Length: 204
Image 1 (tube, rainbow, N blue to C red):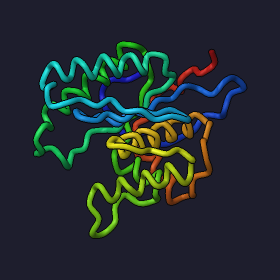
Image 2 (spheres, rainbow, N blue to C red):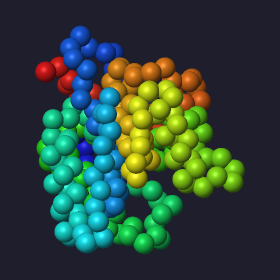
Image 3 (cartoon, rainbow, N blue to C red):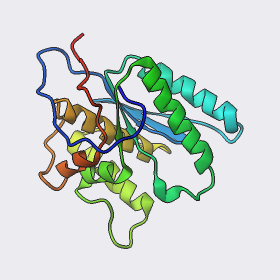
C-alpha cells in the first residue's frame, strides 16, 4: 500500500497461486466518462454537464468506491502531464488524488500506469506519426477485441478498452496473464509502472 508516487518499480510478476484468480480492477479516470474493467468485463461511469466541481467529484468517488471495494488490486492510469494546460485539468487532478486516497484508506493496493505504458502493453508502441489520440485509442480498442475477445462498444468504448488493458496488466503482474503478449514489444510496457511495494495477498 502506498500513497506518494515514487520511482517506477521494475515488473516482477508473482507466480500464480493455487487459489481463485484475484479481483483486479482497471480504472481509466475521467470527469465525463470513467472506464472500469476486470478480467472479463468492462463498464463506464458517465456524468452529464449538470454535475460539475465538488458535486461531480463526490459522485464519481462514491461510484468508484462502491465498485472497487472488493478488489485485491486496483490499476489506475497515471496523470497525463501533456494535458496540464487543458480545460478541466485542475478538477481532474483533484479527482485522481481523491480516488488514490480512497484506495489508500481502504487498504487496496494499487499500481499507477503512465498512459504511454498502457498503450505500449496493448500495441507495442506509444504513438504513430500523424495519428491523434482518438486513432491511438482505436488501436487499443482493436487489441482488446482481437487479443482478449472483449467488445467495447458505445460512447465510452475507448475508456472501457483502456481500463481493460490496465486490468490485464495488473493480472499479468500477479501471474494471471489473460492472453499471450508479444515480447518484448508489448511486455516492456510493464516496466514503467509504479507497482505496489508488496505483492497483494490474493488468497481468499
